Amino acid sequence: MTDFSLKIVTPDGICYDGTAQQLTVRSTTGDIGILAGHINCVAPLGMGRATIIIDGQKCYAACIGGMLSVVDGKVTLVPTTFEWADQIDVPRAERSYQRAQDILKNKDSTNTDIKLAEARLRRALVRKSVASSK
Image (cartoon, rainbow, N blue to C red; front, side):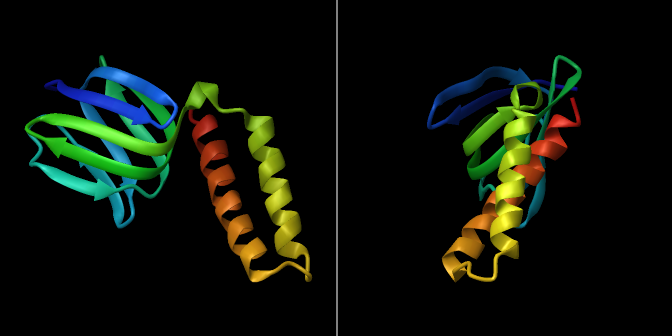
């Protein structure tokens, strides 16, 4: 496979700056796969697992929110949250999952509480799923 330039930048800083052979991320409308020579595009990111092939090795990460940009062969991923599989704090994700479940089961929860808990639940599930892919 041919390499392309990939930069992954979050609000916390650069997560990766190098080359890759393939990138698959979840957009708001479904998964997008990027290979060298991809047409220029911009897409909003959803919440899911990113799969990146670097030096022939598959690497996984939790990728949540943000934007993907492909311009003249250079790919820039600007997620709100990006965590490599081996850096995910699984006990923390499990605690977040449990807190979200508790809020969803509570009959006194407000609509805002429920929406926030649903988002927390989805993020926790993504993190747990990606962490199990190591």
